Image (cartoon, rainbow, N blue to C red; front, side, top):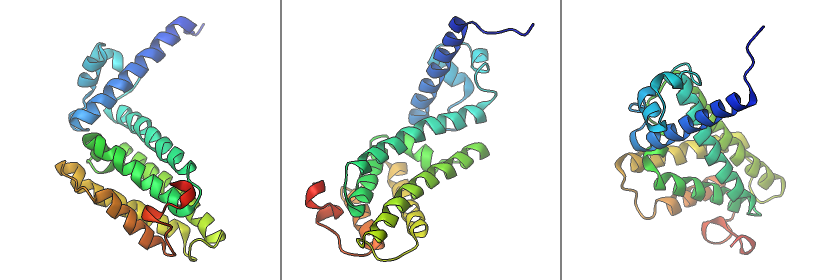
Length: 210
C-alpha cells in the first residue's frame, strides 16, 4: 500500500517549503544568485541542508521557483498600479514608476531578476517575466489605439521595446547603486515619446488620475 501523508505532515512540509522560499528571497536580495547556495538557504531557513532536497531537487529548481515567487509579486504590484489609472498614458506611467521605484529600493534583488547570469532554467523564467510586462504594456497600447488616444502602431513591438529599454536603463544604476534623481522621470518621458500622441500633463497623467 502506497504511503499517504497525513494532513499534519503535509502542513508541516508546506510550511517548511514556504520558510525555504522566504530564506531564499532574503539571500537573493543580499547576495545574488551566485552565493545563494542550497546550504546557505537551508541555514537561513533553520533546517538541515538535506531537508531542503525534500522540496527542491537542486539549486536550479529552487532558483526557478524563487524567481517565479519574486516576479509574481512584481507583476502583481505593477498590475495593481495600472488598474488605478484611467488612460493608456497614465497606466503605462504607473507601471514604469512602480516597477522602477521598487527596483531601486531593492537593487541587489532587482539586478538578480533583470541581469545577473544564472542557470538556463532561470533564464527561461526571465523571458516569461519580460513577456508578462510586455503583455501588460501591449494591452494598454491596444486600448489606446482603439480609443484614438494613441497613433496606430504594432502594440507588441512597441511594448517589447519599452520593456527592453526600461530594463536596460535600470541595469547600470542597480549594479552601481547610484541612480540619478531624474532616472524615473526620464524613463517615463522616454516612454511617452515612444508611444506617440499627446501626453496629458506631467508624466502622462490626466486630471482624473492625478
